[in-house]
Amino acid sequence: MDKEKIEQLQEWVDASDRIVFFGGAGVSTESGIPDFRSQDGLYHQQYDVPPETILSHTYFERHTEDFYRFYRNKMICLTAKPNAAHKKLAELEQAGKLLAVVTQNIDGLHQAAGSKVVYELHGSTLRNYCTRCGKFFPVSFIEDAAGVGDGVPRCDECGGIVKPDVVLYEEALDEKTLAGAISAIRQADVLIVGGTSLTVYPAAGLLGYYRGDRLALINLSLIHISEP
Image (cartoon, rainbow, N blue to C red; front, side):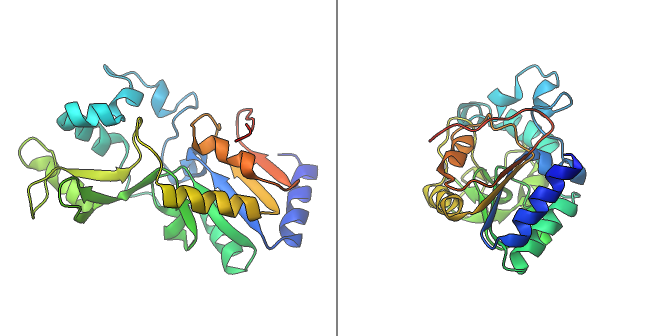
């Protein structure tokens, strides 16, 4: 981003108290979490089964052991810490300028930085639940199960399989989270989009709900916005 554009964005931020940030995997790369679609991203690495297939509801159901082997290795990163972007957004919220963060990330780093209003469109690796009785478990439960039996985490109450509270391919977004994100975007007078290629739907389509005229796009590659 050149100096003129940076100054323009700063003017918008200074004048606004209804900022919404919409972010993706690129926000967390500085924290050591790889993104998905860049040249060095997860989806450009070679696997016997494509990551998009492994991270699907069907694969989780049919190949649960293999799913968890990949998931623990590539999707959980508990050593990651919030970076400057996460912290700045939390500061803007605390200053009464930021309405919400709408994120496609599942790492929980926005909350770790102090943000309170965060719509996690694709869920979080930090939450996990029993598919039979609904009991919730921390991410440590998923990691600890790696050394037990086939490595598939099972509920200590009913024996049901424990699933990460993340939205896999073929699964729908949570309706309450989706409604909150749409409402925030509609209210925004400044919308900042960062670290996302806007290729994952329906999340990317939410930007079409923005009604303002102060839109900042911050990404390494060219991105575009589609109407809802």
